[in-house]
Length: 192
Image (cartoon, rainbow, N blue to C red):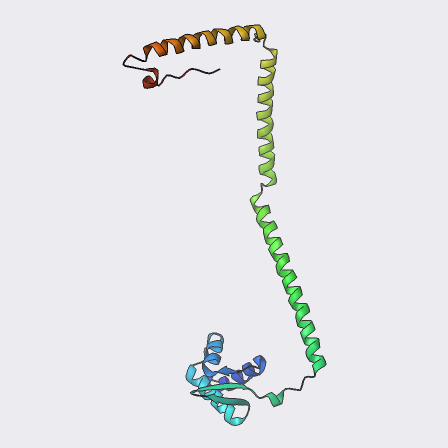
């Protein structure tokens, strides 16, 4: 069976399944990727199906629209339509909930992928414990040192510093007349 012979039943099945109007170009575009049908074959098959009465054809200006014969479908009452609408709304809500759940799981997956693995955490814990023990040893050395500075010694050093700073400022004022100032040499009073 060639593509030409297979084209008619394939198009008829497609139009009955979708149950909506299509132009020959639309049917060609939709079926060409899957079945490799040619545009001329699609147009001829649709015209033949319309002549046989299997599908209906309407002409709008230069364009022809084809659709499935509605007489072949059973009539649907209002109760069935309402049931379908409610089922559709339930399925839409379920799809939305699943989409939200999928987004949440994707975010959780990204978070888990960006966090450390168990092995990396264990190695980091060992490294931090070693660093902590080093700091504890250093703290112990500082606490056990006997050369602590007493408040009196600290006060004495601060007084000496203030005397020297005062003398430096006085000399600076006197030397402002000179060629080179401390600012030119970028001298700054040291702070404690």
